[in-house]
Length: 285
Image 1 (cartoon, rainbow, N blue to C red):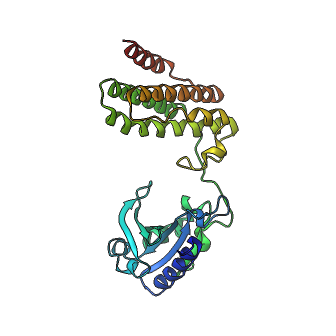
Image 2: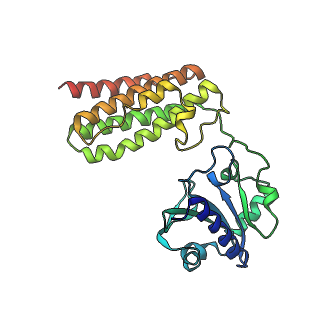
């Protein structure tokens, strides 16, 4: 089987050749792990490409050009976390290529406004640049995406949502709706991750690098939190699910209170008290 580096090197070459010969494709950039020096790609990393074209929607939906670049196992249209259209593709051998399709007008607006896209800030490599725009939008050095300070209203909203979701999950477990409860556990973890990020920034400063989506969490979260995380994942079983829910609540409460104290904002303890007590009363019946 071809080594991953060999596949992606060949794919980049063939993609650049195809894009370069296709008039309405104006630029293409590699982002993600295969473009950065900090936590660079390993053998499991996929290839992320941002494509700018006059008729970007055509290349998103018509895959004849993609078939010419390799034997496809599966391909489908999706959206990035920011709502941008992308096509995810697995090629023979298990090699993944994710391509975001954006308009040339959007590229020209970035250049006009002097804006560096957020997903370029950790690094970007040029595949195609027919209009010589890379110097305006590709950063010359690594820079974190600026983040706003944590404000009290947003903090309280996350705490309220966490305990509301905890209440819902507890109710579904108690009534025997385990599937429903399990599907909502991920909502709880999204809120927990947000609090872990805030907790880390509260301890180390707002510019502290917490990556995104839990990436490299073991490097930036504190050791006590990392240890307690092991307790929140559970089996498809009532007693274990309740145990994991209570472990999630205890972990969230600890880091939320520590974050609130550090930032001198008010922790909504009444919300915590009422819902935690309700769960405790129902479990004791």
